[in-house]
Length: 456
Image (cartoon, rainbow, N blue to C red; front, top):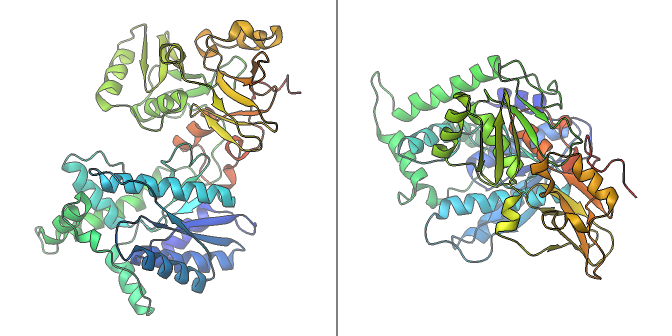
């Protein structure tokens, strides 16, 4: 399994640069195996490896497990940071809450360290267990070799890389044992109160025809699918253009607004597929969760019927007419449910409305939507807004000072970066290699910046 996993690392990651590669290290067998593999690859390819371990505080032994993981990282030649999930824990839905807390903590730490890719040690067994869980009604997403961080906005600009999806857990553990390595077995993985533990038990116990367990059959299928996916369906790493234009799938697809862009409005083919439409809605609406399946299906049915209509979903507004639809942030929400301006600490990047990264250098600034404030803007700022789609104007951020100075468009008094296009490019697999990452979400000037002509 190590050979194919190394191929994945080499296909996705840059070599000979100082930026670290982050690795989620629990101390379990799979993550210890990935640590050893990735540490060797990093040494051979001029990269630094940063292991990130989360103590969830859910087991009396968790502090000792974190110490074990940090020690294993040091012995492998990797840097290590321990992270803690603090605060109250939910009475229900604990595994999902712990998983999201882990993603958020790891994303924050990885971004702060300058990493753009986080390695995860999922195997073919995790794919098989997920299939069992979904068959029982779970909404758990499917694991992919290369996918955006699910934590938003903490995971902006970060991709997750799973180089071990073609390997079975037993194969990995046998390799570790052959190396004389130690690892931690979390008893929570066997606690049948939780869905994943029940799925593991199901895969282990259920026999199938022809001998072998259901786990062996299902895991083998997952491994074969990974090989087929790599061989046929995926663009060559580093070859995908940054533009969102896509015509090869018949969808004509996604492109930025033809008007001065950067405000996050998107134009999409009426024949858009389910995955693309869901991603467009989440990104344009600044949401951190996907739309409900039934509501998404209803929108798709209306699009396919050729109907002209306006609808809202996931914080986004959909205007369907002709061959394309315009998707913008639903700015009416700011007037129906007004929120107080968000204070901006100087020198710190702050994400506003899930769509903008804003940074000011002097104190006293706050950010708010243009909705309800457009008449107070300068003539120059109003002219900029008038160049945008009407429905997009109210959701553009404006900056307000605590000294009652008239509001100004974000970007004239600080740095304002629209995150929508970059986030969507990641969600739609337009960036397939580490070298593709690092645009607007990492502080570089974004393409087609809305305020490029009026920076002071």
